[in-house]
Image (cartoon, rainbow, N blue to C red; front, side):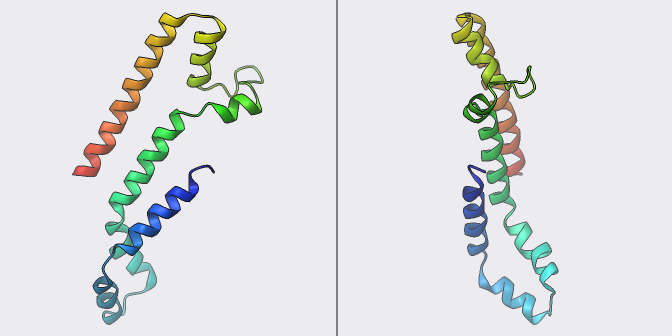
Length: 123
């Protein structure tokens, strides 16, 4: 729930950026509220929604504090994320070389997926 307010703010800004002429034309055509949403608001907010998804996606990979504080990665390894494993490897076991290599691979995977999101947004 940390960044829900950011997504709501982005959606609100996206809705405010839609020109009033579209709503007036829909009112003249007697379009229902669903059709206004489906054919005016949703297509015009596509870019904003993709940016919000991209930001939340990148943020989901950086999660560390909440699961570590709440469960410490347990019971067993049920709530262990890659970021928790990297910290345990680097600090707990003092294997800095493999931890650095895994973190670079982790970064490259996030970068690749973000690039795919970007290319989808541009097209």
